Structures are given as structure tokens and as C-alpha cells.
Length: 299
Image (cartoon, rainbow, N blue to C red; front, side, top):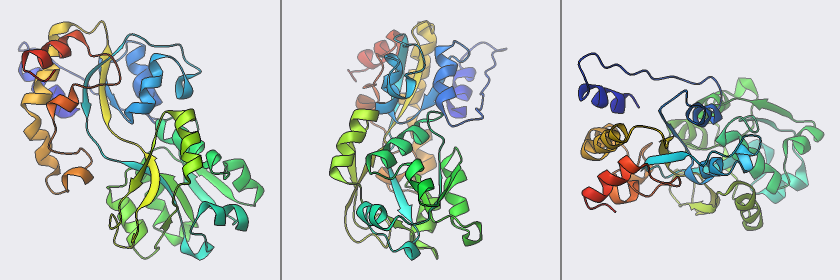
């Protein structure tokens, strides 16, 4: 976001300034900031869950529909959400978990406060391993918002965590947990559960290919958790929307350069960024963004 605001300000009047606001929680406030009119633009993930803000459904069922949300661009990210367990528990599948009823100390996002937390809870419920079930087995449930707040503590055995569910698979946080000394085992998602999760979240099933981590020898099913949307309201001035979209597309090489150390489909932002795919957003395109894409042959 700082890249966008800097490039934007450089092309505005000499006294122009922008401000970037951080959020304290798990991410649902990002969309709230735009729907309320507090923020002009924001970025959030995953897009197939975020589209429910338009209708006030699923994660947004406690909020009014926001049909005035608009998209400026889809920013690509190829991600998944999974559950992983300490190998000492002796579980390699969800059936093992349901049968053994291990005493888990799990860390995950709080329900209904973030896209990650909401998806994580629906994922566990669909597999018959809800937080209530975990507690009934004598387990402990700890909540944290961001991926690193969940994944980094699991790397320290002294903290006692033996289970975690999250996304951000391309990060070292996951690599160290799966291929490092703790050797956590990712649980393959069950096909029937993935069907249920798509109904409750809008997120479809996907897979993690063999070799994604050194210890992952076979492809496993997981939950798709892809792409960011750069969003705004329909009352954002058209010239502002046009300029922001122009920046994202014409200066995208500057964004991509930050991720050339990653394989293109395993970067925090996938590269190369394709303007034709960027123009396909789960919210209706803002007229200013649409005009840019059409003028340049991307629509």
C-alpha cells in the first residue's frame, strides 16, 4: 500500500499527502473502514470470501450489505489454508484426530474477527474437529490474529503448541515448522468437508503439490485462500480510481521486483502480474478503473 500512496502523491498537487492506517484486529476492520467511508481504499484477502460483504452474508452476516463496494484490481497470491500437527500426536489424517481425540494446544484466529479466523473455524467444524470438540478432549485453544502470531510460537516447543491452522504457506514461518526440527505434519483436507466449507465460506477446495515442502512427498487437498482485492466505494472520485489503477498496472514491475527471490507462484504477491487478470474483481469495477482497463485493451 505504501508503494501505491507514494506513487499517487507524486502525481498530485505539491501539498498532497496520504495516510496509511493499520488495524488492531484480524482484518475484518479493513473492509469495515471502506464501507464506513473512513478509508478511501484498502486491500484484503481472500477474494472469494470478501465478495460476501456485498450481500452481508457469511462472515459479514452481522453487517449490513455493502453493494456500493467497488474493485480497482485483483492482486494475485497463490495460497492455501491448512491444519498441521506435531508428529508426536501420531495423527496423519483428520480421521486419526477424531479417533484418537488427542489433547491439542492449538493456536488460530478468533472466529468472525478476520477472514483467516472465520475460515479456520469453518474448516475445523466441517472436519468434526471444532474448538468445542478440542476442549472436550482436554485441549487448549489460543487465539491470535496474524499468521506469524500463530506460526512463530509453534516453532518453540517450550510454549507447548502442538497444532496450528493458518494460511500464508509461502512464508518461512510454515517452512520452518514443517521442514524444521518440529516437523509438523499437514493434515490432508477431506473431500466432503471441502464441499461443506465452500457452502459456508465460498472458498473452494484446492491442493498443495508434492515437494512444496521438502517433507511433503505427495499432493494433498487443502482450502484455497487466494488473491487480494484493492477495494474502494463507488463514490471514490473517478480520476483518483483511474490514477491508482494506472499506477498498479504501469508500475507493476516495481512491485514484482520485491518478490523475485520467490518462485512466481509461491511469492507473497504472485508474479508476473497480468493486467487482464487484475481487471477481474469480485466487486464490480469502479468506473475509473474500468475506463483504464478498457482504454488499454485489458477488458
